[in-house]
Image (cartoon, rainbow, N blue to C red; front, side, top):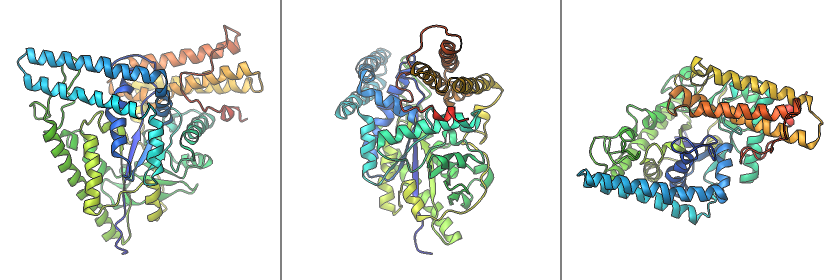
Length: 490
C-alpha cells in the first residue's frame, strides 16, 4: 500500500424544475425562491475551498440566470413581503396562545430571510457568477446535465436524447466558460449503451447507483468503472449516503433538529423532532457531532477498502443540494462542520475529477439502475404515471416528424419548432412523474404537463394547419442555448 486511503468525493446535485413564472405558493415559483434563500445562498458561503462536485442542472441555471432581472425583484419582494408577514403573524399567534418560546423561535427563524436578502443583494443577484467563482479556486468542480432533467432511458428517440444533452452542455459552456468535466444523469437513470451517447458529447464521467448489483456496503462500490465507450462511471456508495438520506435513521431525524413535518397555520416549523421548541444552539451542536461521526465513518470505509484491496478507493457520497437547508434545516451547518472535521481527522475531500486522477478505474459491466426506490424506473414509469410518460413519448415523436417535414423552412417556421421543442423539453422533466408518484404536490404536476402539451400542440398547429400566428420561440428563460440540429438528422 502507498498509505493513500483515497478521497471522499461529495457530490451536491442541485436541481429545481422550471417553476419560474408558473404558479405561486407552495408549488410555483416561490418553491424556487425558498430553495435560493434556504439552500443555495447558505451553501455558497460554505463551499469555497471545500473540494466538492456541484451539479447544476441547466434548468436550474435557466432560472437563476433570470434573477438579475425581473425575477430577482419578485424574489426580494417574497423575502421582504410574504416571508416577513407570515413570520410576524405566526409569532403573534403563538404569543396570544401562551407560547412565548415558539414566538421567539419564529422571529429568530424570520431573520434567515433577512440575511438571504442581504446575501442576494451582496451578489448583485448573480448566483451563477458566485458558482463560477466557486469553481475558479481549483478545488471544486461544476457538473452539467441534460437541459430539463429528463429520465434519459425513458425518452422515445436518440434524436430527443441528443437534443437534451446538446442544449444542456451548450448552456454550461456559455455560463461557466468550459466543457464540463462530468454530467449528472437525472435520477441517476442509466441503461447499458447510454455511455456511448455521453461520449459523443464529450462527457468524461457520470455517477451511477449499482447498489442492487454490487451489494450495499460492498468494497466494489469504491471502484470507478471504465466503460468501453470511454466515460468513467462512478458508483454512489449508498451505505455512506444513507447516513444522511435514510428517512428513518438519517441524521436529519436527530432529536434536536427542526421537525419539518409539524407546521403552524402559516407553514412554519418552530418545533424540534423531540416535540419541544426548536433550539438553534442545540441543533448546531448536534450537527457538529453528526459531522464528526460522518467523517469517522468515511475514514473507516476507505481504510477498510485500502486494507482489503491494497490500493486507494474513491468514496462517492451524492445528495441533493436542496436537502441541505431547504429540507434539512441544519444541513449547511453540518456540511461546514464536515469540511472542518475532514481537515482535522486527515480525510481528503476532492472533486470527482481530482479523485479520478488518484484512483485507477476497473472494468466491470454496468446494470440498468436509478437511485429511486426501488432502484429501477418504477418511480418514473409505473401505472400511476403512465399517462404522463406515454404522452411525453408520443409528443416527442410528433415533434420530430414535424421538424423533419419542415427542415429548410423559413425563419418563422424554425422559430415555431424551437418553441414546440422547448415545450416538449419542459414536458419531459422527471419532476412531474416524481411528484405524481409521491403525491406531494396536489394536481400541480398534472397541470404543468397538460399545459406544456397543449402549448406544444398549439405551436405545431400554426405550421401544420396554418392556424393562428407563429408563437414566440422562447419559453421564459428555458433552454436558451437550444440547437435543433439533433432533430433534423436523417
